[in-house]
Image (cartoon, rainbow, N blue to C red; front, side):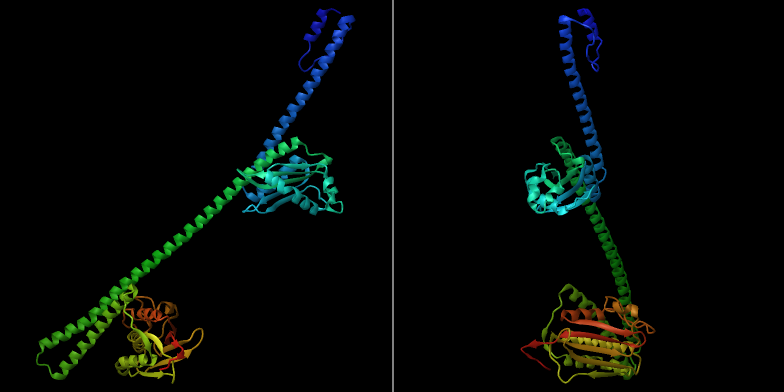
Length: 485
């Protein structure tokens, strides 16, 4: 064989098909062909290895890309943890895996999800092993893997034999370790290799980033929901406030209308009486006296109206003067009855008083408490038909606190059930049923303000057309020994 034939044979080879050279030869040509065949065999083997490596790298990239997409497929934190551990077990070809996260103060690992392909006989072994290795995985932020598990046989009962391999990897957030991923028992008794660790570490890093993103999304979602709820609550509060303002505005309009009417009525009477007296200077003395008495009554009515308005304004502004001292509630009630006696006599109403022989003193403003009882009696007389009955009752009570309770009952028109919770509101008139009686709706509001200033309570019990009972309590005086009236 000539050198020319050998060259032609070599030129006919392709990169994927090199040698061997199979042509007859002798002497030096044969030796050259043997040397070339050895060289070509080495090149062919190298090509095969490189091709296999390229295929493995391509598969690895495909695997990482595929697994990353799976792990990134959800932002729901619990679903993400489940998908992540399933994917990592599949990629690692392991029997079992667990994903653990550090709690808020990084003091404890909490198992979030555990998945099995095949049951490990002694799951307590896993926990004991983890205690030995997890601290180093977290503190050093480095993976731990072992294939020879004999070192764990000293845990007792030969439990270590149930695990042939283990891989623990730190679960990294953006800055710090946020947990640990554990994988156990390679299928078909394979060992974990450094390449396995490198691939799975990449996926675990992706998992950590996704977990933090999911946490941030959850926090943002929770914040948005809380904000939405807060906005809804504030909107409702504003709507309620606006509704209340509208009610107050309407109540004030009604009050102004009522007050104007109340002022106009006595003024009209006074004006008419004055004109009559002026036009009849020779009117007899009895008629003149009756007219002057009517003028005096109407002036008193105007004065009460103006005083009620001014007193409420002072109380609400905190500018009311209070003369607080030790007083007897009995004296207050007796004075109020004297004040309202002309009204009760005019309607032939009996006012019965039920006072105990002994009752503790109270600390209060004498005149303002008289105003309260007088107002309650005046209302009772106003809404009670002629020849009706009114009872004023006083008793001492010890529960829920030591107090004096005063009750004013009448046999009047009563209060409708739907109006009971409104009787102490400003500008509201009570006792409206079959009898439409005048009033500004300030008297009971003032009573409530005065009683509450004395640290007491006031309330009403009533049944429509069956009468009403107004109650109020005042703290009984205690100063060493009981003080009695």
